[in-house]
Image 1 (cartoon, one colour):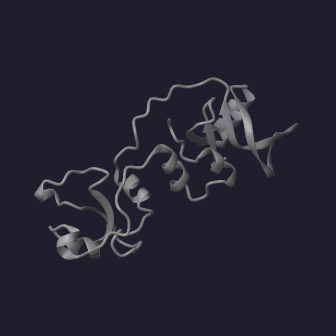
Image 2 (tube, one colour):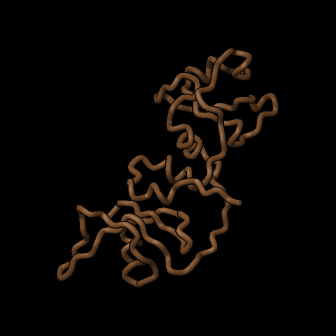
Image 3 (cartoon, rainbow, N blue to C red):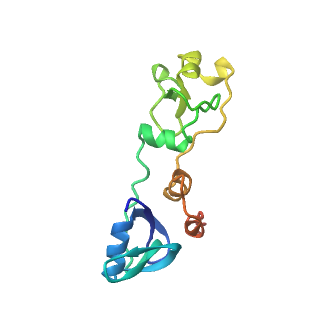
Length: 169
């Protein structure tokens, strides 16, 4: 039971993923309702079968304090799809500061990128513009929804309607 299930708040906003086991417990205790189920697989007990959940929605609204995505090495590489942002390589990856730390560059979402060790060494203690190296994608701070949508390789198609970016008025 290592599969993931999308967990929605009462207002249908995505708040997290949870294990299949936790999702089943929430459904069994009637704390959540089944929104989307796997049509091909079921959960079996000795005496009964249950639908395998893909998306569940909590019955009560849960206030989730948004702390943002943590700035970690793993999350930066996940944001950059485990590719060097200069050449596209997926081998020998490191982190690179666009504005080097020796020049006052901070460790922020907008200054850190994934780079292979070869490109990182070539850039050295300079900015990409000084070495005439172009970025494949400008660094950004990911949202929770985009992290759930883009970060999970095996995102189920049933999740997609709930992982669309919401426009706030």
